[in-house]
Image (cartoon, rainbow, N blue to C red):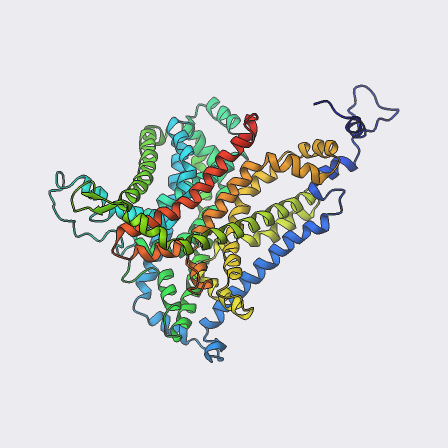
Length: 611
């Protein structure tokens, strides 16, 4: 399309020619226009102060919410709760906590499942990357990442329990031919006392997340050049990825690893479905104490939540110390020059593990579908003896309120989180050439606190804060509680892509459009549509999966798909639980599909805009 006269004049004004300019010297750019374009939509429009409202409101909201939440939990743990007439500080709740007969087993199973999950997910994702990246199997896995990540934790836990339980599908496939049994075996899986089945489920669920983070971090590194240099030195591809690429990727993965540690130590919904019961894990035990009809027990619950917070913070500190120790102890292995390692013969094993993980995810979804259409399924039949649509038909009549609450809360929290994230990142662009950028990033790191703190450690205090403002058991309070956990994930998934946007594009667009705001709306947003939609899908998935905020802030007046799924998972009817677990999965999966296909339809004639 030919440029108009006005656009030609703007382009001509970009450079200022001087009488002393020589043919071999580049033109000197005007300082105002390029700098203004680099600074985002606030340049030249007086909107810098307006954009400051976004990070200011986010910082204030998170600081007040998390601070008040922690304070509102710490004080009851010391016996101070004026609503119950407790106005004297005392250590009696802690004495009751440590004298409780279940506390030892709860702490032990929590640490085993939490640390086993973090170490297993990190090591497995690193080895799978080193042994499989670039292969056909890895390509298949990348295509399955979106469906895998869209599966909520509770739905995956239910499907896995249907798969590995004594009367599960895996046992049915080999019985009675290989096992010789006509009745389900008497092993305690899931819900084993050691928490191993919970740990395995968490490893399977968190490994794809770590792989996604690793794939995003690869965009910050010149992969082809690194591989070329490594291969020229005689190293095999797996060795280059393990010795050169992974050490460069880890700084970009550290926060995600810490989030996995915090989540696996404090997870409630999956622990209620797959974890031990006598005693349960510490987060489940704390939730039971908070929901106990005896109000005195809530003080002990606050002490247990504070103990869990200490366990998480101690684990994060230990992870940091281990990181430094491992670097010090094994850095010589990276530079020892050995060309042969155990990775070379283990490459087929790595591909088998990758295919095995994808197969498990597929089987968990298939078994949910089968159980949802089952009428009678006697053991050890591989498939049901009778099929029925009855439970789907019945669920339609009972699904209205939970589905409506889930969709409204998820959409509201995600849209608010997306707007706040884009506003914060645009304001960050105005500071990109100033010394204040590092201070700004440090201040904004407060939004990651909900990912690194146990939900039960501060959500009770948040409930008290909302009660003081008369927002408890309200839709506003519920959306706010979801936003606290949705916003960090949106910022984490969109931040790196948004920051890597080429500023030269905005410079040119601003000159042609005549306004930074027009350039932002007509150029930058369309070019970032795909990552924005993907972040939107992540936000919906996070909101759908929220159990503790809905349980506490909703005060029992709001039921979502997740609360229904967790409640039904402990029941005896697998068919109803399977139907609701599939409903829980269909919401985020549908949004992920929209995030994939909407850019393809909008930019059908622009292939590079679809990527």
